[in-house]
Length: 247
Length: 137
Image (cartoon, rainbow over all chains, first blue to last red; front, side):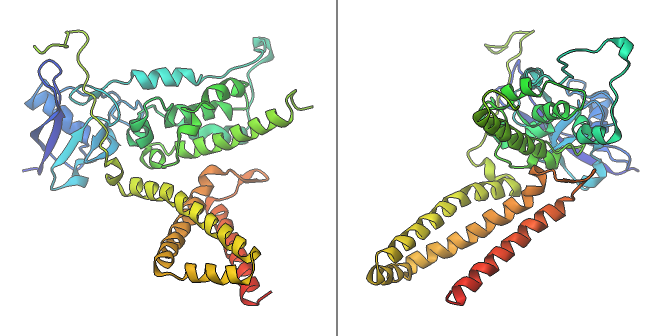
């Protein structure tokens, strides 16, 4: 008989509960099963009332981020056997309001993401007849790391600054802003700088560095923020010494 | 059904951040200690300024400063200060590669080299100062 493991799953039913509680479920533990498989087993076989988000099961969509034994993890990439003999405690991502069970409210992140304009901005679009915007492999490598972000929000969950001050723009949004700033086709760095130079922008970060440690895609948001600080400081000095712009 | 809950706008649960959040992970504790080390950096500067003022005020003032500085309480504080200064320097040197992108030609300088050059500069400056002080120059 296959080994089994206990999942202690956080439950919050807004229609009746005022606090989250834990419910134990025993699930099979084959070596290829991840925490998400365990949750799907619960949903399909044991308790259909359990709510959680998931989609692709392969670390691409960023939907299934949860707190597993206190660590922010993608549950589709967290194997049950790594936690034997168990139990495994599964909770919603920290630092977000909980809608139900393991589902968190992500509106705050979505609004912040839009604010930093994570898309290519051009002063003047060249006509289609001029062809595509060409880019060398070196130019691509400048921003590729930051483009791997899947908006899973594990970094927000790990960031104590965001937990203490929800106005902080946060790691992923800043890393994505940096992704476009470093893109040779983009001309929107100045627009983004106005937003990110605010107190709740890059200067809110105190370089705890946990965002980078928990990132499942090795994006290094902490690095992006520190580099942005340096860039912002240089721009401020330039504006001070050359108020009319560089010759 | 509890008050405040409506079917299409459920009541969100907002867990409060514990006052002791910084004890939850070793990395959070290390971060708090690094922030705390700034106070000791400030104290080190004050101590240096006090010493400079004593030197400037003549031999008697300098001897009085030395006597005050050798008091066990001040010595203890300064030993703690030294350990926090070392923590401050080491943690920042280790973080430097994340904040700096240095390119040589088309290739990026490895992080270990950036941190290593910081440590090397630290050793050289410390050795220079030690030589200056110990040689009586």
